[in-house]
Image (tube, rainbow, N blue to C red; front, side):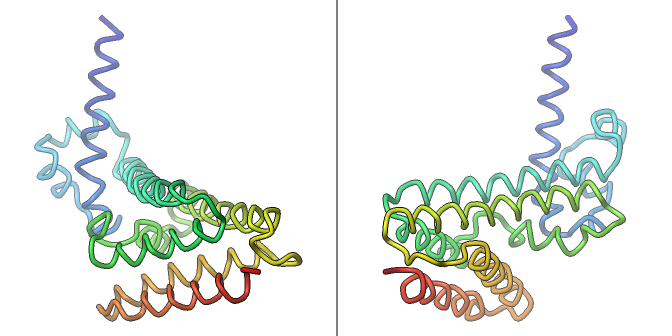
Length: 202
């Protein structure tokens, strides 16, 4: 009996997260109200807070859901490639397609949440940092792989390029969102591709 109740509770939690995730990504933590969550889930306040301690806990779970979804999509694109250069270019291609067919409505969850993830929301901030670190480590891994395979030049600083690429992508997304012009992300991606082809590649 207990096991069945736990499974039902987990299904309810997952349902709340799935329904809440797009709202938090569009409106942010501060802009999302309990009424928004009730409308999206069809649950009462008791139904929601019977599964989560507070709105902050839901927001953290929603960010993790959104972040994992995006990162899994990028990873799938990368894994289709067999060369380090191909993997790097697959990332830029993913974000170029993202302009016209966004994987999530509301924009990049990392950028959206990072704006609000200050010291007042330590758990949320930690989740954003983990996601950014994952991306950074992925860049470093691919660059090191390219060096070992002789595709990329020896003597490169993978960590420095990881910082540059992460800044180009997230900065491009931020400007595209603010100015409502895809040009800013496209320009960032083109510059990233030039770095990959001219500075990294042998």
